Length: 512
Image (tube, rainbow, N blue to C red):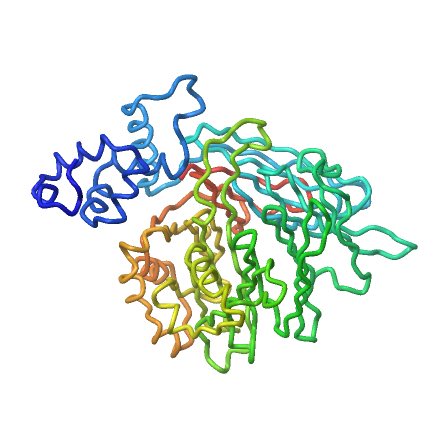
């Protein structure tokens, strides 16, 4: 094939060029995309070329249901079926079951969601019991499975887990000298016993005076971040340790109110903090391997109105799916680039409207690496980084539930839980301008109180901002309207939430 910058290449018709591109392997095809916009456009329009890229991105050579590699025709047929499901206006239910969890003696069901990592979801905590669900995928041939993890010597408060490492890090309470004390233990996800690669079961034993609601956990690779926000003191301590050796890596004191946090990579931790006043929020990037200047960059977020004195803020970053299906004990061929993740920060102001800010983790990592060697903390105004790296969606106070998977986000309308909007933030080059024109940085700075009054208004907001899929599902008769929604590879999981603690939670799985 001629070089993309040559005259011979420019003169080739699209159909001939497509056949030439089919002769390349996926890795070379990705390189061509980076140097030629025409190839990028052609790949977006050609299902065969698009599928080659998807196979490369997912590291999927063939479907695990087949002993021999599939033909290209078979793969294309499977992809076409998957795309047909995506375009359907209604969701197709592929599985349904009841939690049927029995609370241990003398323990109340707390109904605490443990979160999702890869294809594994932690659902409900009953003191010493938590249920895990592996989400199914028709496209990848993964079956759903479930199991319970029970601790015999402690009660679970919070947990963070990594299915790829058979790892669950548990913030738990235990009785020491007749006092209830918090501690952090490192356990096997499958057995609940001490992880075989951990030097100690207990990596950190806290102070009994620390409020448990102010302790947060996150794990990435060998590192665990434990953040302690002390009520009323505007002080946050970020403790980072190696779970394999139990060695302390960092103990960082921040004079800010912590709103949320997650790992960008094993080296960089992202904090969402309130700074000078309640309306000034920022993303703070911490280099946990830098003992002298760990706080390397502060990226200011758009400020709400000065009268907005209450915030409901959250940050979601999804860890890339594991290369092993921990519950089914089989390989799962889905391992995208670890940096191909989405950071979604949502915050609302008192009774006014709010908004979501999304940015790819890879963009934040580029900013972090550029500032790592400076030896000082860089403070970046919103206007200097937001318009070129982020997308913004207006929302209503308490009006949406969001789940993030990879570079996709699922927004659920709290007032009409049968309506879901799917965003794909990976199309940044194609629709970036349209998204930022819809709600530009100037409009955010001067944002007036706004509430989305009905479904049509919400749909208009969705359509004006980003690529989307709007889908509906029928709520079973008698079902409680509030449902927790989690997004997975090509399915979503809905929990009825109308029986938490009673063992009657209905779990429905829909194909996306």
